[in-house]
Image 1: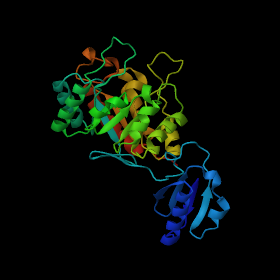
Image 2: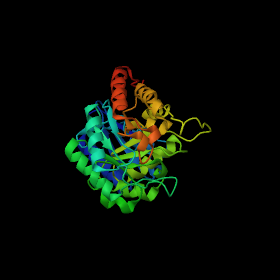
Image 3: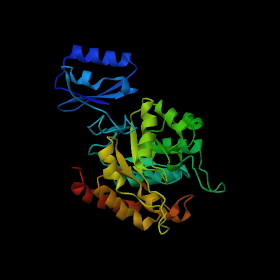
Image 4: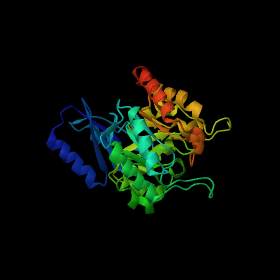
Length: 336
């Protein structure tokens, strides 16, 4: 349920209303806009009398929300959320470029790539330490040692670091990671999402291979219901009948999600296509439809990468992509 308050509501009346709602076990989330304040009510709102609320002097309107996600719902929070990752702002017109290799392979590699992508305009460094792989025989990552390498690369480059977590037991290794990524395979790992909800650290939540937008938002809701509202959504392609590309990048998800939620939405054209030569055109398209950022796989030697070499760009190709994206941004779709 959403309660739209009149401008400059009487503080005593507002405090009394909040106290009454909390007394009947309703959680109250306040969102202050330029002209109005919105109260988002979460819980068993069937016991709340809408007519009674509408009759209050400080209330302008009351609406019931049909969608099962509340905290992530734009109706609760009409202003875009800005997520702070270190000194980087994500969302509400701040375009973010995250770049780095699929897997952390060595300190020398990470330092080199961090230097190159930063020079091209990237403002976060990605790198996989714990790797979920389809084959049990494929490279599984450097694990906690990989996190240590990422932290060292951050010291030299100054870039906030992004890495993927697979299991709650790994949380101890992510205390110094700036942005924790939940990969597509773990989008509905609800026990993991609950644990991440207890943190006060930004979370990058990727859409699952075969999940709807509502399911993605419900996964975000798991994190936010725990009290962590610093969530960034990522469209990374879904599995369809098409086999020419690794996945089918669903760019319609970007403006659709922006209409449904206040959370930032970024795009991963590397996993979305699986083919390096397609990453640039899809990155440009993502920027054009209003994405809040991109996450791009960059490797100094893609042919010999430990994982996902075919979809990785060289630093030179990333530099070309970044320049092209910057030319698109002034003309990007901003919504109705």
